[in-house]
Length: 478
Image 1 (cartoon, rainbow, N blue to C red):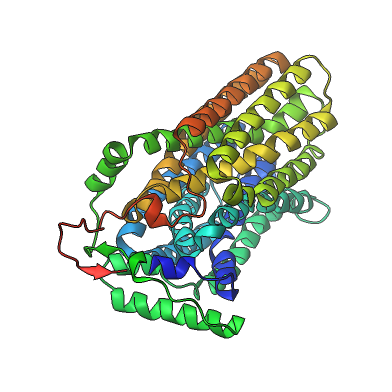
Image 2 (cartoon, one colour):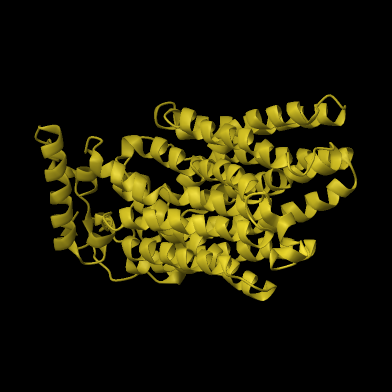
């Protein structure tokens, strides 16, 4: 069955998967940018909330905590109850929570709804990335994953432009504009939900969990649709491409941990390195960039958000333009190049910034180049952990590394950089060196421990835990 899915030519079915599942990253980019951009508005008494600056920071931390919690809880449920149930449930949770956020009338309500908004988004990552990898042909998996993960920055650019207009008091009252911003996120989420209803469950997951007849029917329908679309018959898959498995209803949490730590310890270290490096860089540097512009370079508050747009474009173009190289040149070389290259470029940017050679325009231009490579690497981190662990633990692996990386980067990074900004440009440069060091170190870990997964079936990269050994009695053939 995996070989039948991997041999399929690109078709409308695959576009349905991309549009129905991949657009969640746009929502996350939109959410994070909106909150960052409206932070100053929420501190105004006539905003309807009147938060302090510290409370705005607390709300951001609560969103991160919700995302980490949601990724772990829903990641486990995704492996246990299926991809489709959870990618519908998590999007539904996001929709309800972000709508309720728009109707927050005190800080406590705002905190609670931000937590559950984050939980929905965090849960999406585990359900979505596992489903995408299991439905997209192996030869296109790298390009598709990187392009989808890079779409986060489309949401960032859209959110930056959107808030400029929604915060304009000539157009919207102070207590209305920021609420509309959250409402528009819900509208986009509802459109995605309507498309997502038509995305099927992963046949790989169904087969292992004893629903082989449903899986066979689903794959046959996909194949029939592709043949009608292309007007040609698909090649028959040789019998030796099958995998003998022992079907199971669920996989315990203890087994998930044991597999990651004892069976794949090098891959475990690899995943941690990639996620911590990119999470620190993005959460520490990117999300404090407006403070660098306003506090250290004298850029007006109403102009600073526009700097996020070119940086977001650089972040999107990196995985979009380089993605196919991860399938052709290879994962190990390209991930190493992306991480080490962005780290070296960051060192160069720090040196010039410290020497007073960069104003706001040229610092933004340098960040566009740095994040062009860093974004490709960060997207590849999600690709890596979604394909190097067995199918039964895939969603939980994505959830774990996302939670650890986001937790460390989303807490330590911003706190550290907030302090460094108070000390001036020289102190900020020290933070840049730290971020560069973590990215270069992660790139070197990839060089020595990376997995050459390009063009390979997921089952070839990591055999399912349910796979039968020759000495075992065959149970079913996928």
